[in-house]
Length: 382
Image 1: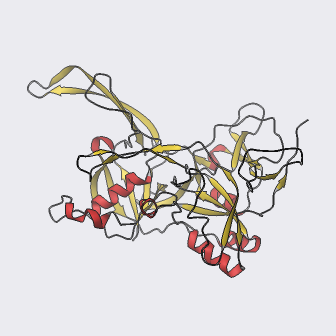
Image 2: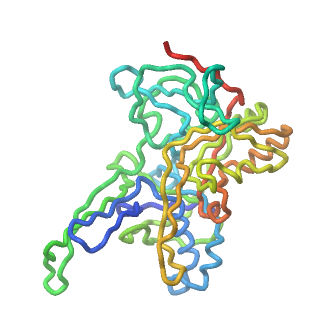
């Protein structure tokens, strides 16, 4: 049972790195969604527990090699099973208000590599095309769901088309940020300590009766189910195995990629690349295929750090920039159709970060979508 469900019992705090100490008015703020390194740490801690329920330091080198994929957002049923997968919104989908005034309907506009007119130029690296809408649109960007339902996501992987859709049919915003005020107590009197008021802001996964959300990770390591702490303030999570598997590659998407010799690689978790936004491991020849990067649709980078507990003395880890989940890479796949098929099977729901340890940590989990491999003609507004 390699898919594990992590369901927070309390609002989860995945710290954003801002200082939080014993000072009046301090605030512990959570990220909008945990980084893969957070869930990988929980998996490895769970895998290294000894018979007494404590982590065995002798297991450090072994557990660091455990490969983890995720986390992904899931919706749970009343039977505690995974009912629906939710994936980060793809970066090549521009969501606009369906009308010039705000409504509950959205207009999905596809972004694709563009063929510029002869008199136009960009500062992109040689061989890279500008990615954007093929034609101008006067409508304003809309407040879009952060996560798409798996059914809508598959439609976009298979055949991304411009058109209207209801906000609630497309996806949801995921866990809700919840703030709580706390006060430090004097142990002897059980009264409030003067000036020791502080605030925590966590992620509430049960959205007030409408949805019951959780995290899902993939690991082949044998783990122990039960309650365990996770994240800041050691908030409790329920940890259990699932009968589900990671979403499978749709047959239609696979065949389309083989026929067209091109694809979109869409990140389901943030990735770490040595060259910043440009992947290296992904573009290496593999399975008889030589990928060529044609264009990218990238949100603003994210920053990750952490605390190194293995070094003596303990110290902060170096800050790194991540390519966010939802980022899209448009690739041409040079190779025989059979080789392209093997390449697709090799890359689906695999981690594509450059460094092996980052891939084991779950950074850069990838899905694949269809793309014609042709540059679209760009229409100029008048």
